[in-house]
Each structure stands twice: as structure tokens, then as C-alpha cells.
Image (cartoon, rainbow, N blue to C red; front, side, top):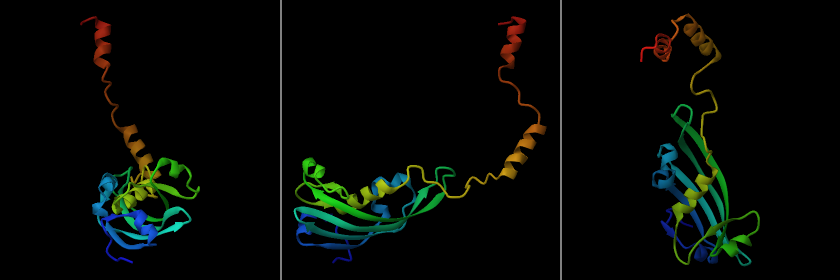
Length: 175
């Protein structure tokens, strides 16, 4: 068991040795996730077990973090807790991926090393909402405020029609 996570791993080798990886990856190192984040502070806690079940090389475990995403309503930070189980079948071809048991997702690897952060980042991207937003009305528009705004607009002078000049030209014939 490692407390400091390696940058590159060989998933097939770890599965053969029944390896275990526990540690943290800084959120700031997850480049593809950066556009969705309000802030890249914090870490992703990783707890992965590698093994074999017959001929199937697999990764099982859990990732956990709290991400600060951009609320799509107010564009401010929204705390998004993540606690996700991982169940991956390590495959080297699409044919092997088609034969995986239904409860496993494929992890397609070449012979050699794989970036651990890419595996974690893929899992996070798959579970994040398309449009993250606060659970409450973050724009601060309450029904009383809407009514007050409506009353203010009702008493104010009507807005000038931008096409009134064209109407005058049409009536007078001056072009």
C-alpha cells in the first residue's frame, strides 16, 4: 500500500500483484476538469484495489472529494460533494470490452503505463452534473421582489418604441 500516489501506473501489473493504491491527488492537477471549477483547491482521496477475477483484470475502489463548481445560475461557487465507487475492467481491445460483465466499465489500456490522474479525472467528469447549480434560489429573486419590480415598471414612463421613427417616415413619406 502506498500513501503517496505514483504519477504513472501499470494497471495489468498491479492487478497481477493484487496491488492497492491509497492517497490523494490535488484537484489543481486535473487539467480537463479546470473549466468546470470555480476554484481548484482541495484533493481527491483515492482508494483503489487491483486484482483478478478469473481472466478479468479489475480495479475496484472509491474516490471522494468536495469540488467547487461554477453555479450556472449565478456563476458563483457551489460546493459539490463527490463520493463515487469505481468498478473498472482492464481491457486491451474493444473485443474484450464488449465481453465485460455488465457491472464493470472498460478501462482500455495499452501495454505499458497509464496516467493515474487520467483515470480519476475520467471518473469525476462522468459523474458531474451538466449544469451545476445551487439547491436554493441563488439569484435572490423572491416572489415579493418580482412583484415590487413589476409595480415599479408599471408606474415608470413607458419605454420609447425603437421603430417609432420608421412609423413617422411611413406616414409622412419622407425617405
